[in-house]
Length: 121
Image (tube, rainbow, N blue to C red):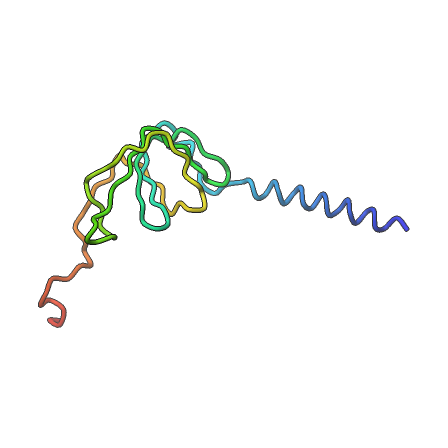
């Protein structure tokens, strides 16, 4: 008779504990708060801005943000040109990478082989 009721309560309790587990995020973004970060999105877009907030789903709020424009001839190459985006919300599921901009420098590609070097091993 009363077994169905207990089952529903157990399911509710299980759902509540599942919700609590889901909200724990792996990354601690608080150390990057009010610092400049670079965000890469699925699809190749990149923006730089000051991190102002985030949530458990890794949705980010950036201020003073700028998007790096792509080379029209080569969609994989970013130009030094930027366009101002201002205050923006970045959807967590579409973010691939978040990194601080300080201490970041561009290096030559060590895996890129020059012409004629390929078969000389």
